[in-house]
Amino acid sequence: MRTIVRAAVALLMLVLPARADTACLQIGRIWSFHPLDNRTLIVEDELHQKFKVSLMGECPHLTFDVNLGIKSQSGIGGLDCVRRGDDVIAGGVGTNFTCPVTSVVPYTPEMEKADQTKAGEGSR
Image (cartoon, rainbow, N blue to C red; front, side):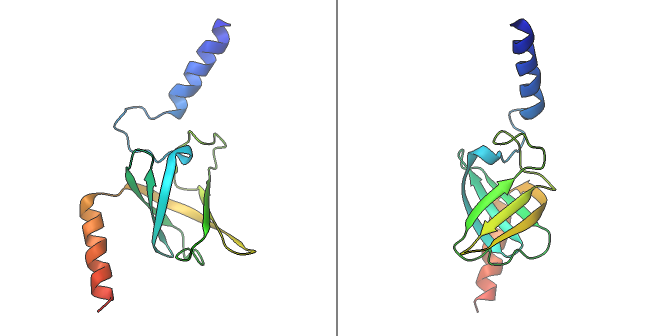
């Protein structure tokens, strides 16, 4: 029994972030998403932390109302952090597009303000 408990603790130490303040978008805690364009998603987790997820190339139909999923390449599942090499799967009517993740960074208020300014300039 002790061996199982030790193995479980060791696995959790590998899966969970090393520090509580480490920025980690866990797949199982995704609350909402908002595409900025066909290459960028803003994803919010259950703790209302926002992350900017950049994708390799354009992900077709990402800006439309689609179903969205993230597949981890590690195979750990819902506790795993989204990272480079994972796949965003955008599903429309009868189609699915797999779009590789190139980066995941915390979405700061400064970044949000810059994106809002950029969007405002584009609508003129």
